[in-house]
Image (tube, rainbow, N blue to C red; front, side, top):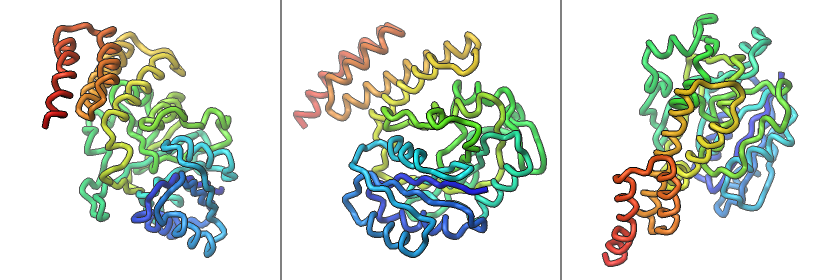
Length: 321
């Protein structure tokens, strides 16, 4: 069983070497690492090329800057040769036994299409500040409704998992998921290329919808919170979250209850409102007004109208300051 690890990279010279080293330190050696550089202007490419010269399992693909990790990941998927697809962002890290534990579970349970695991959160210096992300956001009672115990710390996703993903939050992080490639067409596995943020949420929701997924209740990767990353760009992320929720509401792999439809509508409304507010703070009044107008089509409240009218006032104050 061979793993294809796909890593998008853009100006990650401070961390990409650590990310690569965490892969080369794997106790399971049968993998290829495909790094797709999205037009970096720092020393990232030179660092990657040094590693690639020393290890033939590393391949570097250079592309013009798109600003979207989804496009970089899709480029890697198209050339991947492994049986299992997985991903690692250029500032994140794998646990040394990550691939080994996943391989054992895939080999023992041929019915699983997708395996994801818990992960830790680290600061820019690499210090852990949340040991278990999943258990920090899911209480024990909810956990038992989302997963059925299989063996030890392995769990199978229940029928409630898909609804939780679309109603509340995805529990999958890009660096904490592995996909059995043979069960899906290449087109099915592609990330939505038009999204800058939330590009993975639609894919994860689809992958868990059939119930053939497993969860390893052990942190096997580290997600690094990095200032200036794409996920910190507030208005763009909120707008992409709106587009994700809209996409999910219109493209369901299985029927959903009316309560879920209402929840999605409210998530769309809130994402539009938040995106509009952040656009006004960023000095983009026309986009802010456009998003407020979209939100008012869902809930034309006086409070929302008042928020909309505050936009030119906020811009005026900002320019006078």
